[in-house]
Length: 86
Image (cartoon, rainbow, N blue to C red; front, side):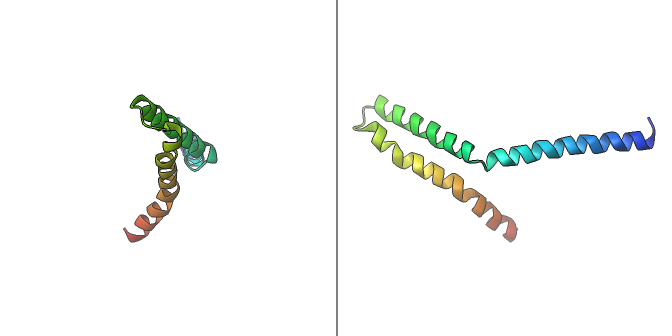
C-alpha cells in the first residue's frame, strides 16, 4: 500500500468516526431522547410508587420525573460553565 493510499484510508476512517460522533451528539441533545427519558422515568417511578402502595402514584410520579428532566436540560449549561473554568 502506498503512502497516498494509506493516507486516504486513514482519512476515510476519521470521516466515518466523525459521522458517528456527530450522530451521537445529535441524539444526546434531541427532543426525542429527552421525551423518552421523561416517559421511562415517569413510568418507573409511578410503577414503584404503586408497588409500595403510595396514594395516587401516577400523580406523585410527576415531580421526580420533572426533576430528572430538568437536570438533563441544565447539564449542558453546567458542562459549558465547567469547561470554561478548567
